[in-house]
Image 1: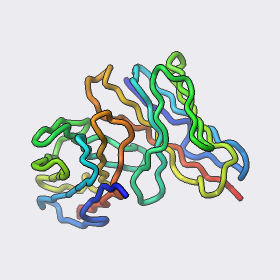
Image 2 (image 1 turned 180 degrees about the vertical axis):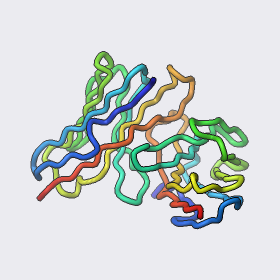
Image 3 (image 1 turned 60 degrees about the vertical axis):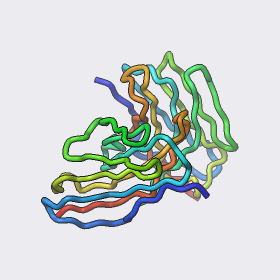
Length: 112
Length: 115
């Protein structure tokens, strides 16, 4: 069964901490994405990547960075966590044709 | 401003009826549109994709229509079951508008099917 695996389901971090959210896919997909989901706001795109070492900003990249050193792994980094980054973070991947994303189960991050 | 609207936050229907969910968009010309299902606390699951040159797509009890003139997609679940209760998201590929090949999502419609 093909999968996108996010390293943590729940995470609690303190304000100012550097936070790493890891995402691994086993489908040899070229494209990977990070979204955050908040009630009433839907999914908002943070960053995405078409290939190893490539990254593109989404709609809300401020306060985040990403890393894609290997094709199967796409990491989201919160440089200095703030309470307004408390959210559900969803990683997704797709093949080169972008037909149908496969999402991970999400990481619910709470920043206190 | 550009917008994706899904008809209502919640839709309640009786088991066996057809559920119809709406996705409207303004100021976009999407290359294609996708529908996803999301259960509480889980990531979305891909259901169907329909391209701009297709009017209708079916998969088992699901049917999607895409009207680029009305800028609207309708998502139908026939013979609905309580197990169909979930949030349904529409998502647009806006490569023609933004040059960006990443989906933009609506905020979803929560469907509740009563037994």
